[in-house]
Image 1: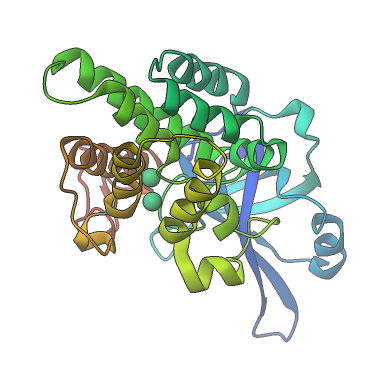
Image 2: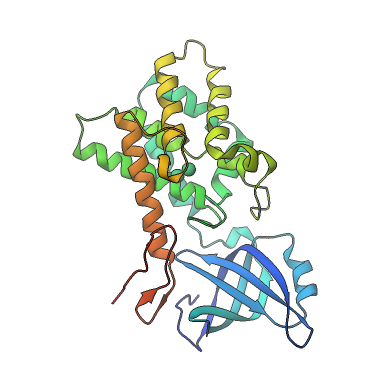
Length: 295
Ligand SMILES: [Fe+2]
Ligand SMILES: [Fe+2]
């Protein structure tokens, strides 16, 4: 598999389809534009011929094996696709196994009885777990690929673990790790099954409210769950975006403040990994609020 972006060179790999559009060329023929992602790459792919029959074959899957030529269009790299076929998940390049192993190890290190019981209810919920492992973390802003929600959650948890190693006395480790695990769980309801759109619940309530509702439902099944702990966890979810990124409340506990910063850091890191470069510079990025120079 060669996933380097070199103009006029061949590229092939297993890409996640984030979305697509059928457009009309000047000659009246339809062509297909796909938004694709693969690890650090996010790129548009173009199919110029026979796009309606290709589209039919792609409706059942979000993962496709793509071959094509890298070209430049309006100062951005694109893939001129020569071959596209649905991909069987058994062959996935996304390292779901390693990432989920790391996430479960961190979860298993949590000692607080009630945090453990709450987490166990999520992990034992097979419908939730399947979506949590496979869904992207979003459609546009960050980790918008197969397994992205798992990857983002793991990285936020791992950063939480490292932060605790450096500042043991400043905050409660179990609480931060629990909040890190739960902060984006609402995304399994916010995003549709095909991962190409938001659900009605997602559009009307958003993943923060949905996540709090999911946590409330699980807590209601745990007898004697401490009110103060429940409030702390809800607050971490409610405030993790901070006011600037759309939370209703600013983080007001040590754990919530740290989670907010780590969440933002991981989004920034993913952007830096995925951003397209052209002549040493990226285009202006709305999330980073700058163009980036790579030298
Ligand atoms: Fe979030
Ligand atoms: Fe997040």
